[in-house]
Each structure stands twice: as C-alpha cells, then as structure tokens.
Length: 491
Ligand code: NDP
Image (cartoon, rainbow, N blue to C red; front, top):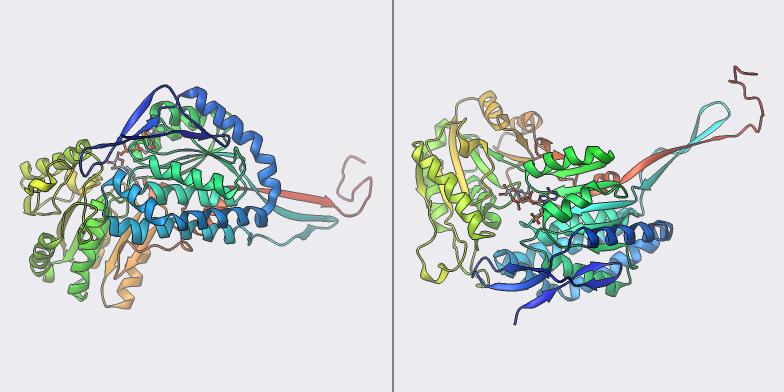
C-alpha cells in the first residue's frame, strides 16, 4: 500500500481531503500520496509561525543551536532511510544520496547552528559626540521557503539551516514532485524538540500554496530556488507587500578549457560536471569552450568518456547516472536536443532514451554530447536541465571570456589551465557567483553559492546566507543626559 504523507503545521501532521501522488521517476510507480493543501492550510501555517516567532527569537543563538544540533543528530541516525527515500522520489543514484545529499544536508545544519553564534558586525562606537551607536542584526520574522525538485533535501537544509539559526520562523513549500524528505525533516525537527510553529511544511501546488505564501502580508521574506521564470513571477508578486527576496534561479555554466590544461582532468571534470544528478543541477557544466589547438583532441576524448557513463537503476551501486525527474521533463530535454539536431548540430553521443529494457519504465535519457552549434542557438543559450553537454571552440582568452559571459545566467563556471596568472585573470572576468579553477561542482558549507545576472541574488550556505536571512537595525543612544543637545537648533 502507498504511504500517505501529511503536511506539518503548528507541530501537528495535518492531512487533507485531497491528495496528490508522488512517483518514483526511475520506475513510474506511485510511491506516496501527499496532502494537497490550499490557502486555508497555508494561512494556518503562517499564523502558527507568527505566533511562534517571539519565543524562538528570544531563545537566542545558543538555545537554537542546541536544538538544531539535536535535529541534525536525529537525521544522521536515519541517514540510510532518508537517502533511500530521496533516491525513490528523485531517481538519483543511491551512492549519491548516501554520500552527498544526506550528509551534506546534515553538515549544513550543523554549520549554521555554530555560525549563528558568531554574528559579525560593527563594534559599538561614538560616531558623533554624545551618541553611542550599535548594530543589532535581527531576524526577518516569518520567512517563506520554496524549494525545487533537483536536490530536495539539500535545498530544504540550505534554506532551513540559516533561516532558523538566525531566529526566523518558517513556512516551507517543497516542490510537488519531491516533498517526502522535507516532511521527514519536519518529523525529525519535531522529535528534536523544535517548538510547534517554528518550522511548518505546507505541501501543494506552487500556483496555489506558493503564491499564497508570496502574497501573505505576514511573511517578511521569500527564498526560492527554481526556474528563472518562477523567480520573475515571484518578484512581481512580492512587490505588493514589499518583501525581501532571496532567489537562486537557473544557470548555464561555462567550462573553459585552455590548451595548456591537464586534458585528462578536464575531460573527467566535464563528465562529472555535466552528468552529475543527470545534469539537473543549476551549476552543471553545460557549455564547454575549448581552445582551438586542442579542440579536436578534447572532442575525441570527451566522446569516449561520455559513452562510458553508466546509466542504470538508482538502487544499483554501480549506477553513475539514474533517471531524470519525470517523463515530462525527459521529453522537454529530448525536445531541446531534437531542435538542435534539426538546426544542424552533431550529436556525438546519446541523444535518446537508453535501449535497455530494464530502464523502459523510467524517465531515463542518455548522457549526450553535442558539437557544431552556434553560440546564439537555443541549446547554448537556454537552460536544458538535463544530461546534455555542448562543446564549442575559441581562439583567444578574450573570446573565451566573451563567450562564457554571453548568456543571461551567471551562477557558476570553471576555468581549466596550468597557468596560474591566466586562471586568476579569467576568474576575475567571468560574470558568475562561483568560478572553479581546475574543478567543477565542489561546494562546502562555509563558502557562498548564488548567482549573478538572471541567476538571481542572495547567497546559500556560508555566513553570507545568515546575513541574507537577517536585517540590520541601528540603535543610537544619547549618552549625555542633556535635555537640549548640542546639535539642537530648536532651542
Ligand atoms: P519551478 O520554478 O516551477 O519550481 C520551483 C518551486 O517553485 C516549486 O516548489 C514550485 O512548486 C514552486 N512554484 C512554482 N510556481 C510558483 C509560483 N507561481 N509561486 C510560488 N511558487 C511557485 O521549477 P520546475 O519544477 O517547474 O522546473 C522548471 C525548470 O526550472 C527546470 O527545467 C529547470 O530548468 C529549472 N529549475 C532550476 C532549478 C535550480 O536549481 N536553479 C531547480 C529546479 C528547476 P510546484 O512544485 O508545486 O510547482
């Protein structure tokens, strides 16, 4: 029998009359039924978060850190179970959820539990005679968190960690394709003793629950990870209540390979960068620019390497790439490749679903390598969000930088060279929130992740994320006790 998952509102698991199905995209099977909330449930969650806020804020960083660490410990004790659930709802390999998604989410929460105890800022000082100024860094209040389906657990942790550690209370809306591990996080939070109303999870359609969250007058800030189109819509709607926004949107990362690069490392890095999580990663390497002197060699080697990526059932331990998130999304990815083909592109590897009958029930698509495309073509300019890598040549360093920057996105990028001067010169010129040198994809809880240009603004992870989920107050105290101050011109 399929399991039913409820929303988590004001410390209670709340079921609804209507449900929506969650499908394992690797098999096509329904694995769960989930409460389909509407505006009434969303309003109840916001009211609970508003009520819980003063006490959660007053608890202070030490009290909050203790609860967050306990929460992380409970998740760590259930790591294997959570990894299996994450694999079931996303179709990504179990080796990845076990070694990356789950431990990294736990690490993130532990990082924020500690980081919130070290609030950086200006020291108190007298900037004008007779007045002592100090800065209070305060939470926003009730924050709305909207997460995507590509890394459901990680994205929940990236948002819940800093917002709760900073003293906010939250209403989280997970993606409808992948709400299950976020609900399990809420279950662990309840067991850890995080008070009722501090963390609420409301499941249901973005167009209903998400929009109601964005429009709610008691919600002070929205953090979204998702499509750039959704980010634009939310920006327009948030104007109605002048909400602070934190948006991590699409990406189209360039991967720039100079002729002096370690070719083995660049080929391996491009395969990992492009096909991790079936390419459904906003930092995925999507456009490889190769210096013309080594272009043919790179293409040859990349063709062989791409064909070696092992696509298979996510629970098989030697599977390197599982399914995509849904059949609809797989068809969308296939549509991009088909249109590129019709426009004259050469598909060197992949370009179709795998023939393996064992995979026929799932949303699989082969790792795909494409050459012979123009810089202004759709496949180079738009986010495909699938296992599709395009390779283009360049002649000069300036041209490489210009091509890398020639998209509307600016989330991540990488530069491959043995020349330390060139690496640092180019990383200064690329318009992206992250530049890796001789690597691609690696992230750490201590360092920020976030976009330039239409990839959004605001940072995930690091002390910068804590800053984003807070606001600054200036407190200025008169230290003279005088009735008529020296500066008064109305005596
Ligand atoms: P969306 O941006 O639609 O979904 C992200 C989240 O936003 C989900 O929780 C969704 O809810 C919610 N949402 C959708 N519409 C609204 C709205 N009007 N107001 C408030 N919340 C809303 O991404 P998709 O899942 O549709 O994916 C589409 C494309 O977006 C992908 O193909 C990819 O290109 C890109 N994408 C980028 C990601 C990234 O990490 N940068 C992550 C995911 C997708 P619900 O699930 O209920 O619709």
